[in-house]
Structures are given as structure tokens and as C-alpha cells.
Image (tube, rainbow, N blue to C red; front, top):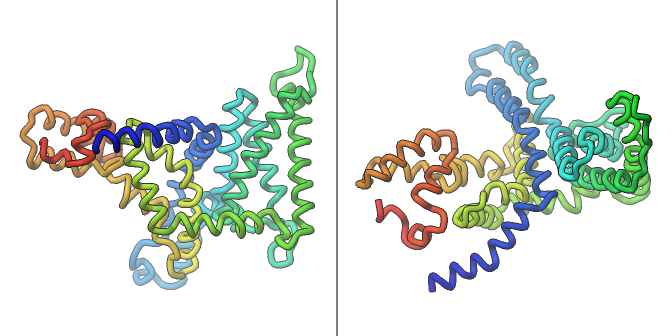
Length: 351
């Protein structure tokens, strides 16, 4: 029975995991979010600092308002417009995968295409971009835009629809002119798309994507069944030696980050947080404490009840790393990978 189950996992799950892990779009999506990660952390730190518990009781109302206003730009310039950084990262990484000029063909053209599709009207005032479209609400539009813009740019470049400059021209100037025609054609496509959608009931691409795709996916991704499936798949992939978090996060990160941004907006508005499942919830309570599978608990058990000298030495190696959510020493050292006893009976009996 056990052998049949293992054969089933190896036959059906491993090929899927391998394809997901090597998919260029999911890789660009994952790496694009990593580009934005330092900014997300920076903004999150100042959200906490600006909202220390009981601080509003210790300071006067005017002083507390001034304090929050002083620190507010830290999150407004990072978390509130996180979509911009993700778009640049995704476009850059995807074009880089093709070996082309990632600055022009990836970051620049992806961001410009996204801004073309973004409505520039707020409460009847034109020439204003609502920050909501640059955050959670515009996340999926930005992802699709970055993918399409990068592919269009690649197509035009590979067709040699470029301007060739003489050898003596400086490299920066030559690259700019080389990218001119592909960028012009790519952005023209997005301008046409914007015009077409202006004659539809949705009026903008943002409204279309948010209504038809993003809202249903966020509802699905915030539910218990999808969360259980995601966490279960992370552990199963790790069991076979594949980085489960990288594979699954490539699919779910856009949903979890969007849910996180909705919570941030609600928190800043002083209303009830709408979502339980967010990126931080997954990393803190379901996956990340001590690394995938929360193996910090295994290290603690090794020191508490373990009798094997070899395992205790492994615990000394894996314990400090586990405090920083790095658990490869434990996963590969126990081993957890391909350990059927652990999968079906629990490793604690062998400690």
C-alpha cells in the first residue's frame, strides 16, 4: 500500500512540480516579488512603529496625528504602491530570461504599459493616478501587463525591428535607439487595448481584471480549502527534495499579497481587517516558523528526548539556522526527504 502511494506521488506530482519549478513565467513572478521584498519589509516596519499599541493613549490627539503623518510616507511609498515594484521586477526577470536588455525591455516598458492601462482620473479630477490601482487592486493587472509587455518586446526584437547604430556610438545611446521601435510598438498595443476597453461596460482594464479575475481568485485563495491544499503541497514537494515554498508561492503569492494589502488599507482606515489568510499568516503560522514544515519543533525534540549523538550534533547545526527559517540542514540531514517512516509514522519514534 505504501509503495503504491509513493509511486502515485512520484508519477503524478513530481512532473507537475518540475514543470512549475522550471516555468519561466512563474520564475519571473517569484523573482519579481523578491525584488519588492526589501521595500515591503521597510514599509511594514514603519507601519508597526507608527501604530504602537496604546501610543494614542499616551500622546495627545494632535501629537499622535503628527507622529503618524510623519511616518506615513514610509508605507505610502512602499506598501501602498507595491504593484509598481513587482511589475518592474517581473518584466525585468522575464526579459532577462530571454537574454535581452532587461532594463528597457523589462522594467521600463512593463511599467509604462501598466501606467497606460491605469485610469488617471480620481473623483472627477484628471491627471491623477489613484494609489489604490498601484497596490492590491492593480496587482493582477500589473502581473499580466508585465508578462505581455515582455513577450511583445521580445517578439519585436527577435524580428530585428530595431535601429542599428554605427560602432562608434556610445553603448547607452545605441541601446536606447535599439529599443526605440520595440518599445514604441509594444506601448502602442497597450494604448489600443486601453481605448478598446473604454467602450466596454468595464471602462478600464483595471476594472475588468479586478472584477472577472482578481476578486474570485482572492476569495478562493483566502478560503480554508485552498490554504490547506497550498500548505499540503508545499510539504509534499519538500518530501521529494523540491523547494515547495518557491513552487507554490509562485502561484499563490499574488493572491496572498493582495489580501495582505487589503488588510493594510483597512487597518489604516481604522476598520476591521477583512482577511485572516495573508502572506504573513501563511509564513508565520503555517509554513515559515523554523522553515518549511516548522522543523524548529523537531530540533527542540532532538534536544529534549533525543538519544542519538549524531542527531544531537545535527541539532546543534540546524538549531541556529532554524531560528532564521533556514532548515535545509534538518531536511537533508535527518533526513526528511524521501523518508517514508517520517511520512507515515513520525520520526519522533527514531529519536
